[in-house]
Length: 385
Image 1: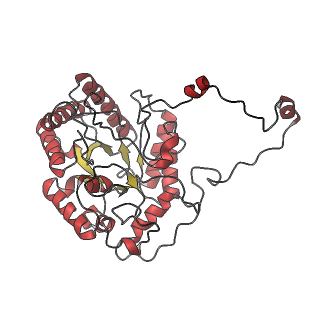
Image 2: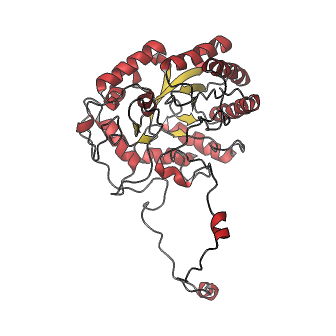
Image 3: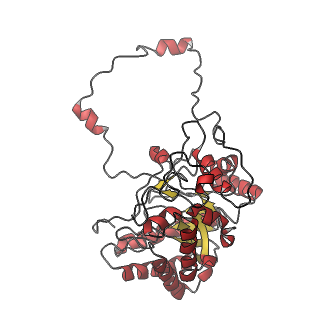
């Protein structure tokens, strides 16, 4: 996990969001003691102990009416909190959940009762649970500020622990849920409404992403800053072209100055070999009022790698032993694949995809991370909570 910190520093960031476990598996191995020591040492050296964020896995559903899944979700969330505590991570972001075959009111109550159990199990720990605003699709909870406020309010009634329950907003989710983020004025209006409904003082983290879907589309698809519908869907966005969009409202809001802001935009490099994270960070920092013109990001190797991303590793000259083992030509004619073999290699239906490379070289990554997309936790099928 320490590589996540290394890469964030190399990209010029001052915080990072990580997964502390495989985000798409129920099974969890205990934290490695050596890895934990490395992480805590580097975290302390950087002075990030008050601003690093963890994102909970996507399998938990605290709003489900299914008792077995609900209890399993509470157990998994307990582990998430305990791992955050061990790694000195103060904020744990999670999706509220989906009520599926029940009602919104029943779903909110299920989350509140789950919070009561979670905070009782982890009494004395400092990790704050952050309810993330969603796009509000299907049976999802958290698509409106009123729902977020209702979940937190009822949870506080049952737990009497307001200091351990906060919020996380996402610009893409807000926009797709119907809060217009296209202009600085409309975004400020949305933030004012959130303040009146939920309280900006309770906002602990902010995900800043552009949106592939238009306002009110309920489509959870993140895009690069300026290339989505918030920034004007520009083919070649510039800071000057984004001065009046919603991103400028977020990065300049005086009450959001110390709120950690995370990119969940697609990963990888642009056609010129520049890391997309560097480009998106450059765009956002350039929108801060009074900031002098920043240098354009240049192609660079990832700090967590030993060579540039697009550079192939030099091959060593073949040894005698290697030549003896080479019984086939280097470019053999491929035999046709039988239908049976082809079917065996077909990906399993329903395979999941993750949103971002947050901890490079970690075992829990998938090959689809460069796409920047992920399936939402919730599903519109009531038979599949």
